Image 1 (cartoon, one colour):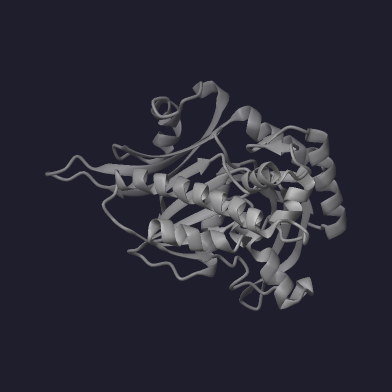
Image 2 (tube, rainbow, N blue to C red; image 1 turned 135 degrees about the vertical axis):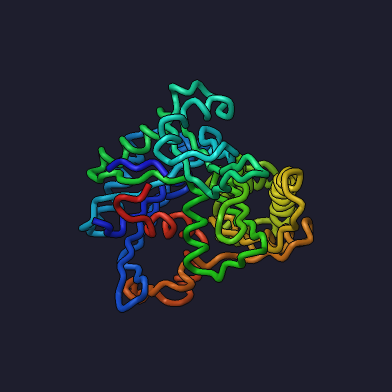
Length: 354
């Protein structure tokens, strides 16, 4: 959404609370090919609720991953999410885009809960209905705002790591890009894409490939670790291992109960967001598509489907991409795929994109 600057694909850089991911795409014989893909775990508390707490640590991790990937492309698309990012769909009288560009700050003031001088603003015109003898006419505009200090922290970390930020997107929209490239999009049905990372959950409800509703919630995979740590009396490191099924001596019944408790909590949060969306739209949500690290928890899609009564599946961000250059087994690709949703969406961005 926020451009800093050829139409080459940018390097996707997903700076998440749990890990940093890089991905480079290239068009080859009419197909999108993944040239490079790498991940580096981040220690807990380095990024909290989408805010960078340890800038030096993040810069070092980006540098190390860039070195490992032997990058040629240093131009980056990155994204942000969390409570300092506001996305609103607003209705305005029809006007040319150039005029809206001049007026957007004034229009945004009534929708943004921060000092308007402390945020970066961007917008996208979704639809425009011309004035007629019967109607006034109106246009739907997607308004996006983020606190300047947060965006600057991310952009500066990228620069200090020797890379160049060209586009800053929003996690929910990056995942939307990923979905629309890999899946057939129904023009009429509503699809909810739910991306659950380590500390933030992004919900994006699409109709015809266009966002109808977005919301970020400060809850994610860290909640599982915290619950397991609390209920089983483990260290945070052992709780993480137990969550991933890598602690064989753990009390299986207690672990199952801890996971089930958080499954229910996440399903309830999603349900609340859907209830809020239904106050603005009478249409039913046809399906839920999960992605992010939490979607690898096998019991979660089942719980969400049961709780909401909506078909729930896990996205494959590599579904229509050629991954042969990664030289990984099919099983390895399947294992890492759910965590690649945001970075794939970012890697689809090109220089000059708004």
